[in-house]
Image (cartoon, rainbow over all chains, first blue to last red; front, side):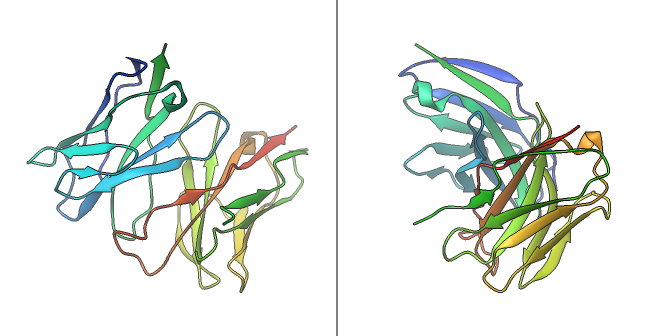
Amino acid sequence: DAKTTQPPSMDCAEGRAANLPCNHSTISGNEYVYWYRQIHSQGPQYIIHGLKNNETNEMASLIITEDRKSSTLILPHATLRDTAVYYCIVKNQGGKLIFGQGTELSVKP
Amino acid sequence: DAGVTQSPTHLIKTRGQQVTLRCSPKSGHDTVSWYQQALGQGPQFIFQYYEEEERQRGNFPDRFSGHQFPNYSSELNVNALLLGDSALYLCASSGYPVSSTNEKLFFGSGTQLSVL
């Protein structure tokens, strides 16, 4: 499974969009990009995933570059409850979910 | 609809002892994965069970073993506990067979194991 690189921490003002970047330059053609987040003292929570096209659901949007070497998770209107560690993971179908260090997002009033 | 449930929530053991952690998957899920999360680190994959068999395994010693029951619930057993086994142990469930849409993992809140 390809490795990912994420900034260790980011801040975002409440109500503004949070844009979390992820580099995955060695991603293979059959590998998906997954995003999970972990709020303190809880298990990780699935957010979104995609292969090539941009994806949107009720929680977030995922923008994948055309060469698939990087992606951005967008929380359109961040709230204090979005403060968490966000993990970007690339994996193929049936592969293990390998977590890195993630990005610690702090949403501030 | 109950999500993934784990028991106990907290556990204290001493070095050399054995421990069993339990997990009930989300309703409708038949695949269970176990993860270990040390303080300040991301979760590390231990193994995955489907149809009562271990299907994939991470880089963990044989002291870590598991079991899946016909009702899809699962146990994680750790023998000869070491201080370094102190961690949050997470259980996650998903559907099978694998496809892009049913590969989402649903995690429980974990069991916090402290080894003294």
